[in-house]
Structures are given as structure tokens and as C-alpha cells.
Length: 228
Image 1 (cartoon, one colour):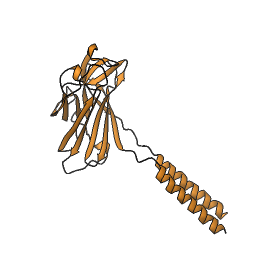
Image 2 (tube, rainbow, N blue to C red):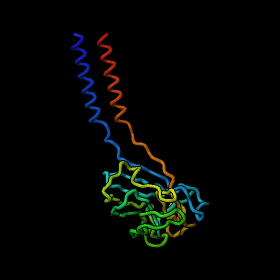
Image 3 (cartoon, helix red, strand yellow):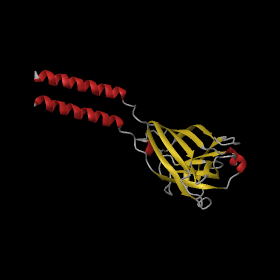
Image 4 (cartoon, one colour):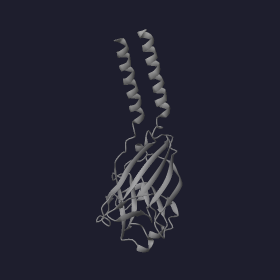
């Protein structure tokens, strides 16, 4: 009788595990974020961080990079002009595609954007992938996104490995237009300059593992009860 009750209890918990697996949220994407928070002298008087960089690894050879302006102390830090956004790609060869951007402010016509290749970014060293946009504040963006495809024959193990520090120790940078928030092109730029990143990862959620762990603990407890 005890064996039958234990078998029923085991079956119930297995069914619970199955339901939890079905109802659990999908595994989070492999995402790594960093903040652009090291300014050059031109914008050092304006507190950072200035922008956020998100690397979304969609396959072992493909990643979407998104730069997003941040608001700080009443100012928004828009991305524009030469070297609008810059990264140092951890690959010997890659293709760049799908450059897009936007500006939710008033009076802006963001872009167009272009592949500027490799080059120096105002004191932060050589970055092997730069993106330019058309000149001036009115063509600046509050988001710029693009896709990198690794064509070197290698793969990226995770989102954090898509970019790598350059010779000066930076893996992302941006050309910043400082203007008052909310952004309005008629207000003009308070100042312009460049800034680079200090990396900080954002861990993935562990909800599914926690749910499954709790169910296994429940199974062990039920087995002990029916053995008593």
C-alpha cells in the first residue's frame, strides 16, 4: 500500500515538473550590456553614464548591437556625426548589416548612417568598426542598432565575447551631443565630445531552475513521508 501511494506521489510530482517546464518562461536571450561612462575633456563636466550598449547574441556567429542614449542631470546624450557609435569586434572578419536608428525628440531627421570602418576615436584608441551619421545635431539619434556576422570561421561563445578591448582598453565608444531633455533640435547642443565604456554584465534570470529545484525538493520530501 505504501509502495502504491509512493508511486502515485512520484507520478504527481513528475507531472508537476512537466507542467512547470511547459509553463516556465522561455530561456532569456544571451545579452550583455555595458555603459558608456568615460568622457573626454570636452564633456567631462557633464555626469555620465552617457549611453548604454547592448549586445544580443542571436546565434554563435551573429549579434545585434544597440546603442541607447541616456538621460542624466536634465540632459540627454544623443549619438551623432563622425564616429557616432564605435565597437571593437572580437573577430578577424565580419559583415555589417541592418544599420538603423531613431530619435524620439522634436525636429530631428536621424541618419543616414554609414560604415566608417576602422579608425581612431578621439583619444580612446583604434576601434575596428565605426559607424558615422550625417553631420550635425539635427541628424543625431537616441538609438543606433546594427548586426554583426562573424565570417572569420570562428564563433562567439557568448554575448560578452562579441566585443573585445582595443589597445587602449575600450571595446565601445560614442560621439555625444549634449542637449537638454526632452530633446528638441531647436535648442541646439550644449556641447559635444566622445565617451567610452566601462563594462558591466547583466545576469540572466534563473526562474526556471528555481521552479524545477523546488519541485525536486518536493519529490524528496514526499518519498521520505511515505517511507515513514
